Length: 167
Image: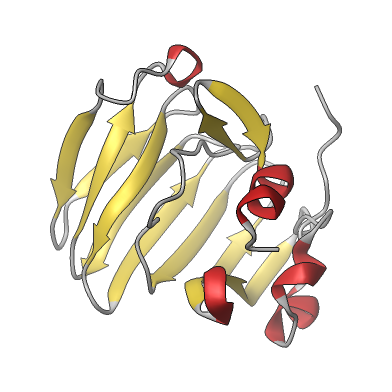
């Protein structure tokens, strides 16, 4: 397994171009730190407010500006619980991403105040994000790295984003 890479600090994220994201990971500790994750065309994909982040847990607020578009499904480095504060979203859940069959997924829609739990062994892809979507995210400890499942093969996020031209 490749070594985990540091995400950008809040200061680095505020005015960075997408190209500067490569090889960076957020620090293990943060309090009231904001970062923006870009998508293709320089648009904002997600704004994350890390209310608190520790090596053991994190509490985040996500303002999701765009759905995942044509990206492959992805995992997360931690298990998490998502609570929709405003808006709604629809996602495809892939319970077995390593043996991914693109047509084998569960479609779920999460409305305001819904609670959704996702483990690290599940991948997903947000197919619809309502305007002004806001979620509260409670995450466990980081146990892996982010990545995408391209034709059933795990690809680290930096390599995938470079491949599709986001960074």
